[in-house]
Length: 69
Image (cartoon, rainbow, N blue to C red; front, side, top):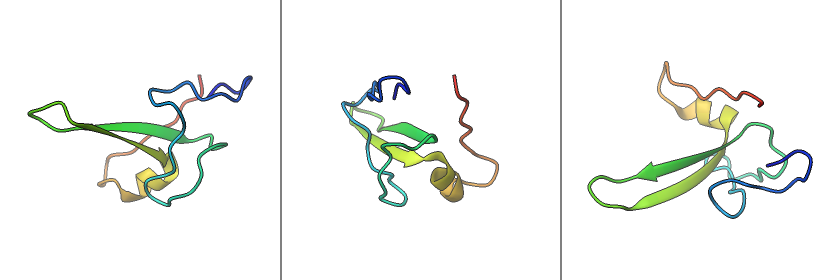
């Protein structure tokens, strides 16, 4: 989301709710968009999440880090 225009510009047409807590992500600074794919095939699923919540369920040693650009 552009902080100047407040318009989501990601790979999907709008921000998705957090797949961990179910909460709104509209103003979340730590929003992440995940794409899951299945092999073989072309099936995919998009998930949105708060990075903090995602880090809470990932395996030890794996974490999402947010860097503002």
